[in-house]
Length: 180
Length: 424
Image (cartoon, rainbow over all chains, first blue to last red):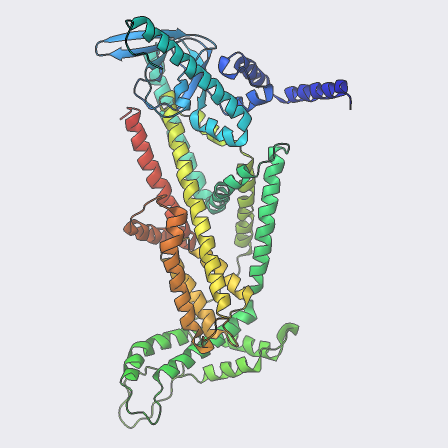
């Protein structure tokens, strides 16, 4: 069979597959493509991930998770705004305000270490949650997809570590011991 | 405005939960016949889930894979049931078994208390007679055939419904049983009067209830649900879990994920561990019975039933012993494969085999397979089994321990997570 025919067949099956999927599902897959975490995944792989995610809606001022709670899931913002804050004795420090397409709580994909900050919805917010054990389950069902996600996570953690090193180096006087 | 909305939401949730409980309670009461098949189907789906995950074929659609797995399991169960069915006694065999069991029991008892003429008084015999005599009378009463059963036996002996007649040896047993007297005759009549010899009267026969065909059909159609539940839970890609977690309020979202996951893990490990443990016990008993010379088909049948009943702690071993012993007492022409064993002591060897299997189960199988999956206090086990038997008979005993496992894991995990998530 020629390469051209193969490509045509592939396009036909993908189109048929798309008709089978509902519109919200397609929207979700399109959205996941825009998230850096999942940008290396194909449509089929994104569907595998989408199938295991939970959609949750939070009202304004509602906590998504609180500092000190065991982490269980990564959250992606479909719509709305989320503030990441930490509480120290009498004051609240806002670390970041995240909007559509951003993700947070990704360390929960590795273990149940307590959350290092509180995530609170600033307005009515729709999120997608990926539970840690569901991702582990994906390793058995679709190892390639799961590996790519873990690889993205590893890359993200490595970047943060480098950034932290640079920040420490900038603040450390010359001659002191360097991290990393 | 927001406060009003929250208040309305609370009222709505409370009303919804109350209604759901009422409707749920009503449905459970009315459809109670469906509960057992649903539980069995669901438990089978949980037990076989790793098999479904392990033998996943990428190019095959998920539903086809599930149907193939179901077909494979169904075939295995069908052949196993078919083999087992040949050894489930029919009406004639049941009567024959009763006759043989009664004859053999009395024969063994008489051998135990018989006083050889040349011996001086056997001090043990009166003691055995005193202790076992009443028990033997009770057994004889239980095993005694009713007049209708006697007629039926004699018809089978002559070749009823075109089947080959019962062996003449067993007919002789039947006649000998008719002459069996009570071993313990209460002292009563005045001196001089001759006591009429009392034969053992059969146990009072309860009037046989007319077969409730509608009830049987209902039960059969209810049990059709079990394979359907198994298939559809197999098709499930986590949609059922997602649906229920979708109902949980945001505050408890991550908590519910963790609790459900841990519960699923604990139940799955326990069920699979128990399944493997029962399988190992069944195989051990089967091999042991074959070595004792019992025909392979019968050994497998006893092994399978005993293995399944092993799921009931304490009681399972006792039932296995009764079944094995019952067969050993009536079995004839048995030649043990182990040299040096006396075929006349088959009953003793079966007891030893069951004891060895039980010890192996406690010392090797359970720790190896179940490990410390769920530690339940023995007192809790006993109470659970008794409660289960009172609620649902044999099925209740079978499901008592898994129910305790679920409850224990749920409560422990739930409270721990509620604390970790700072909800309490």
